[in-house]
Image (cartoon, rainbow, N blue to C red; front, side, top):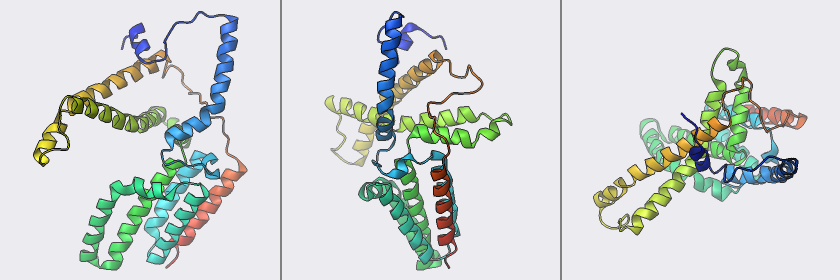
Length: 286
């Protein structure tokens, strides 16, 4: 893909072409340090839409991912409702200690409640009410745990943690860096998709499109006109992102650098051990 000044201008990164000087270097360094002081809180607000503000927010993302996997395995190993009840209490305790609003957490999981209800009815009819409640409880707790992980971490932190966890596979020739970068971009494009859809819908509504009037068939025809401008806008964003990555020489170096200078600490190890013990405990409850 040829890199042009117009494409780089579209990324929003080159509003002007400054002339290099010692004064400009000092000024840019001071601005970068000032921006870095606010980077953590701003990234947390962008990457954690539920709004976590507790002490667990600063835990190493590798520990959070590992505990999420341990919790998921323990959920499916728990045999009775007592163990699942303890798992729910453990999840609520983590949410309270991490200062994650429980009401927001329940609301964000609304997309899965229809599937949970269907599985509940199906398993009650097929295997009895005990099996139905257990299957539904496992699924809804897994959804809440995933949302809790997203609330306590930013997409950048999760991507960097996955890259570090999977780095041994990179020695075998697997494209770990490309995979984690693609995952990070996908996570960041989710809110952009909703933003683009809202903008296109507002533009179509201002032109007389009726999204709330008439029957289902008429509403579907109205939404059918959103698809083409929506995907055009998304492909335009993707093209700008590709130009920006090319301008920053993505893939030119063998070993990527990272702004995250965090190291695995004693507190991270202690939190990991406590979490694994708690997951093992409720999985063994008969």
